[in-house]
Length: 119
Length: 112
Image 1 (cartoon, rainbow over the protein chains, first blue to last red):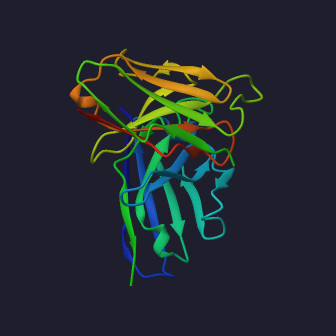
Image 2 (tube, rainbow over the protein chains, first blue to last red):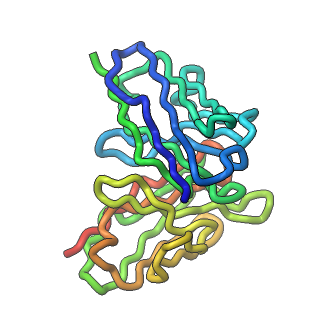
């Protein structure tokens, strides 16, 4: 069974940093591209970033480019999102998601972790 | 960026009756490989999103056959043949043909 468990969320001041993790199990982690999607309170879904199975290719939304870094450790079956220079508008539940097949994105989702940016 | 526009914003439906949601993209979602990477997701209250339909019309694992997807190019539709109480939630279309991935604004399905 595919399982994705996010952690690392919490309250952080504007300008601060946070690192999210997503622990994966139930599949061969290195074989699948992964995605981070966020959802601000009461709002819709917003794509944040994506990474290839090998970790050598990453993509970012313009809203986070230069501030967020997505990475993965395939030996630990873990996905990361390093978030720097956080802003109030980054407040959201952050979900990690796994591809199903080539370009069929976000087939399996974790439960999410809440990030609150506030002073 | 490809803009995804969903209608309606809200869909009150009687149990057992059909529901239909439309999604229009600002440009064609046909990929250079010939596939169209348009998906539909369901988000029940308090839950993470769940993939229902991928590549326009393919039901994902475990999805009931009352859900169906159709369309081509820039116009797509999700249909629920007979709405059940467990179908209450927000439905999103999503395109993965090109980065950035983009989602529709969501359609809330509720019971009358």
